[in-house]
Length: 142
Image 1 (cartoon, helix red, strand yellow):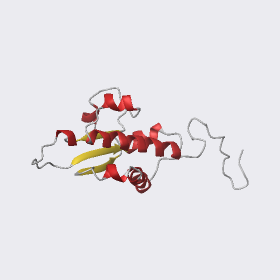
Image 2: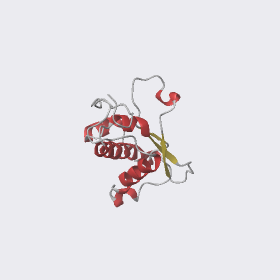
Image 3: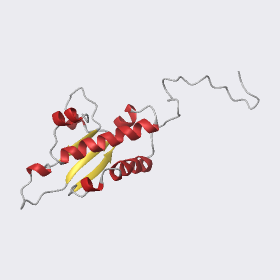
Image 4: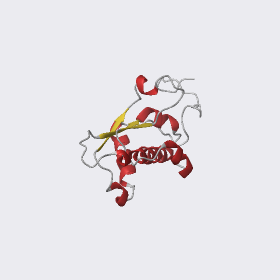
């Protein structure tokens, strides 16, 4: 049925396609601010020891990182953990990459995305401190 302006009426939105709160993928700047908020929410005592780390946001992980595994990669730590560094070694910056589209695909709302980004940031920072996935699972951050 058409309305008086000649436009077709839209059928009701399929709830499987649009989350209840109207959440949509964020623009790059809004996502960056969400990551910055996640970082700034970490205790200052912990952040004081985060050294020589570059945090990068990419849309999706490259195929060679996933390497055919059946996993959805939300973030990736690349570098030498602090527990394995020598005192006199000059190292390139560690790199933490957060993958925006997989993170957003995991969330049904902006609030849920906030939590998922926070958890992923904590997870990757933990790798910077030498905490492996098994220990993160024990601590409830796996």
